[in-house]
Image 1 (spheres, helix red, strand yellow):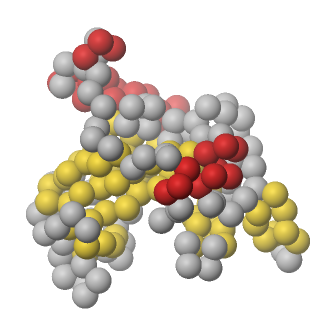
Image 2 (cartoon, rainbow, N blue to C red):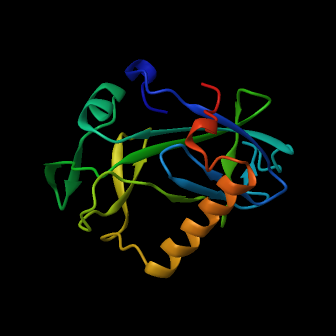
Length: 173
């Protein structure tokens, strides 16, 4: 987890680990969590209820004060890291015991970026080594996928009566 001194709060969502879950975050980011995604440190299935802690980092101030390393190694050359947005997802059972993604399970996070350029790669931060690992070359938004996610978001907001901006609900900090 990144240093929490930046006052970038984790928003908490409790999910049922036995069911597929789609979370629509207040920024428009969509997080898809497949059923039975989490395991304990010992490899056992996580309990039914799993607490998800989520936060986003969209600008240099967020990133600098969070303690996120903003350099990366490219073929032995250290370069400054440019970001179109970052996020952190943590999962727990019993409020404080970390759980982990099972092998072969992936969260799908469609981060709503403030940057519309299509020049960014996808990286994963190894928080132990404090090193970025390249996961995907230049991200490309596929029209069909974007339309599907937009419909999922609209359906979710409609189902929960959140299409009226005056009725938006903010998760607990």
